[in-house]
Image (cartoon, rainbow, N blue to C red; front, side):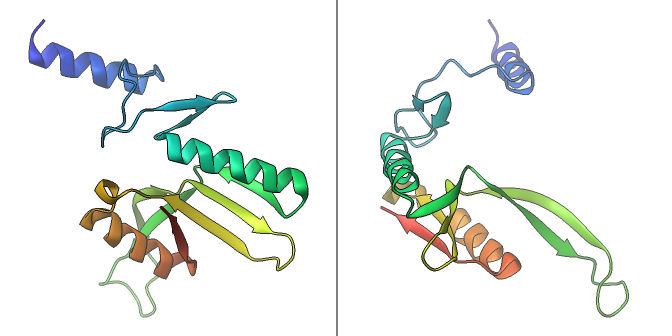
Length: 139
């Protein structure tokens, strides 16, 4: 099979919602499925297990898996303040939940050294500034 055909098949399967054949994530971590949820690493799945215990104990609530945050930019040539915004992408954290005692919303990303790229750091700063949140890195 040609490289072009392989690329098309991968694109088609991804668009159709089919899981790719690989059981490894982009950075070589083993993909893990727990309770029908897909996690990019064993560490991320372990953190999910920890958080579900915290939900069961009543310490946290409203646990979300892979919450998305829109990355928006304003058109600079429009009125002041800008009134036209464009979505240029989405950032997906690993977890978001509420601390029951404090009421604070917590956003977490499980990170290893290879996944702490310059692109990740830039997206993280952008999301934190835009949405007024702090992303906690779990190592």
